[in-house]
Length: 141
Image (cartoon, rainbow, N blue to C red):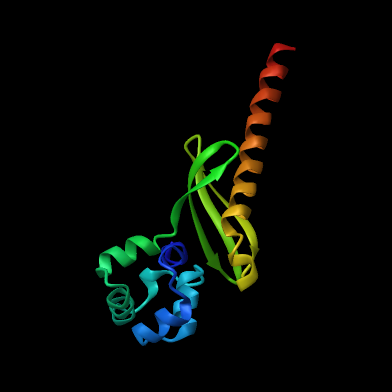
């Protein structure tokens, strides 16, 4: 995610906005998954990539919303995204894809998205595992 990339390089949203000549609100929305890089104009992606001194393809990879989220059940590939002022997590477990609501879209919540995602993923997996146990017990009764 772009925010993680910038954090590792001690680069602020403000500095990236200034260097790239892209409005702060656009950089902020991109870094906080409020807008997908795929939905940005090519010129915006080009200017941000140039400011980061990387290719446009590298920037799109960095902005890919899919990441590994550490949960109590191990690392899960998940996609955190925003839609209709709500953050969501989408992930697969046992061959099925699930989408869960995380929290409202605001900048304070953005810092804890991976934690919220891990809790939701753990909750769903625990429920699914419990269903398997209950089904096995009911078949043995």
